[in-house]
Length: 461
Image (cartoon, rainbow, N blue to C red; front, side, top):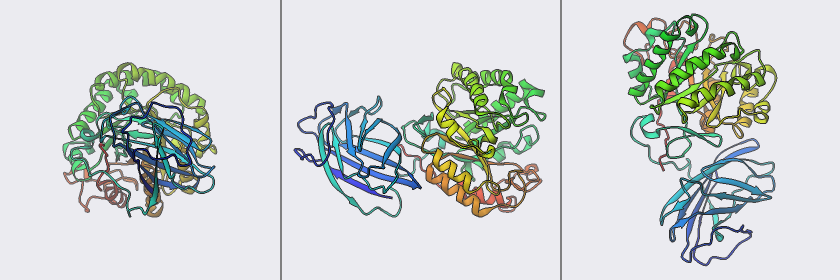
């Protein structure tokens, strides 16, 4: 990680940076600019910029800097309006940070690409006044805000998509880590007060994904009953400060349009009922398969307006083809989504993997796609794609390290005592009251619990 700190002094001279016309600088303007490369992968990186106003209050600002290498490009940014012409990058304030009082800061960031080297910029200008600085040795770990107190939902509030990131109420990127239920028609006894207390307090999970199968003895057999069951689990998650992902778990048949009318009915109901809650995320199609991306996109563009009519602010997750593999399992790649995205805002795209079956080719696709698409790993397993077999610890750790580095949220399959390798609990666990001790955890459960129970990094400033 590279980190640069530059301080602007009144009357500083311009050093190698052409300044675009912008709001006039106040006579006593001064600023600090901090540039941090927070993660880097082959051909891509993520960078954050923090600017602090050290002079008179500023209403309307433009920050400019030059990329040192010709191959460095801004792909997509957040918390500012971003543009690039040649090597020159410009970031302008947006509604929530356009005014900076004396001593106030604004945090912004972007995902970039590079073809040669990736040095940090050495010159910044705020409203036409240039500051210079030098590269400093980075700390061992990236600087973070002190851990915020409170539950995940209480700290982060209403989530939204900013650029390619999931952001909280403070417009800061966050990563949610948690668990998915198994089919609630089969494993209902696993989701009770004791198990959800354990998930929130012992596992320290940020989210519960509620997997409501549509077929396979699911929603189509009792729409009202399954809708009530989903709403009840949403309430239980909210009471414990966790986010709830409402998963319309379509699997067979693989074309989500088969369930289009059911989806509209279901999401109209749950969106109207839960619109007042800030902890709800909607996943509208679990794993499209045997179907084109065009068909999945058409489905999404018909279902999302139904949700928006009742709940205009919630994040929506759209499944991708090839069992939500961005098409990789069908021999395609993320470019079909990048080149033909869903016509909607505040959405993310689902990516699913099973560590023993999906390895380097899939991880490479996620690394590339994360620079251009907002991704949410709404389901993953530590075992094979069948949900069974042995835990592939090396591949699982490689995946989780990648998701942490890219700040991609995830839910593990599955918080249940199913007799399969992907289950977190040993068979029979859901008949008792212990959902946390080593005696009830499978190898998969112990691995995932050790990862999600570490402290969250939820920035609030």
